[in-house]
Length: 239
Image (cartoon, rainbow, N blue to C red):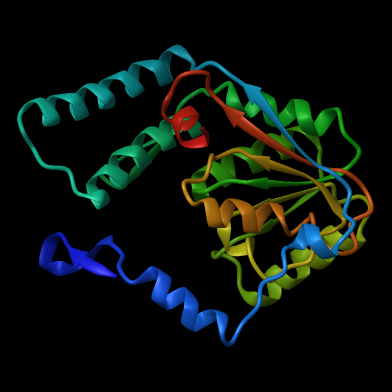
């Protein structure tokens, strides 16, 4: 890696990649999943929504802050850009965080969750990045009378194991609300729908999460559904 940025702590490039690959090839081999498994299709769908007036107001205010900073010549690091996107992401998920205090704002995105859950009898994992986003989804599911479990870092290992067990074995538990703490090391072939409430920035986490379903033992089509706006920041990340 070529290091740079503040105190030489950021990776700004790579070198000798071909030499590294040649070394690795001596001791490893790679077989792609599609070359050795006959799996059902993985189908990608989008469900679009519009920001509510309150979301639009806060979104535009923050976006204008960003533009002003750039016009004033301020230099953005990768970390700073990520923090700015995180604020927009939270607004799109349905909440604001100011000075450590969280305030919910109306969001049409939650209606997409309700629509998918109401119109499917398949098991669904809903991926949300923030705990507040998970709570917004969970509250909606409770109002609908839907049985669900949560898998996240705020649960201890015993609670997480129990949540996964119930999702896999209890036919009355339709939904798992999860964050990226569940994106690796789990076999969730009982699940058939991967619903992205928060569009992930990490392609690796995205692929790993979807492949909790699409793996050996899956006997049905897997649907990957994104809740996404038509022209906001989450659309650019998804593209």
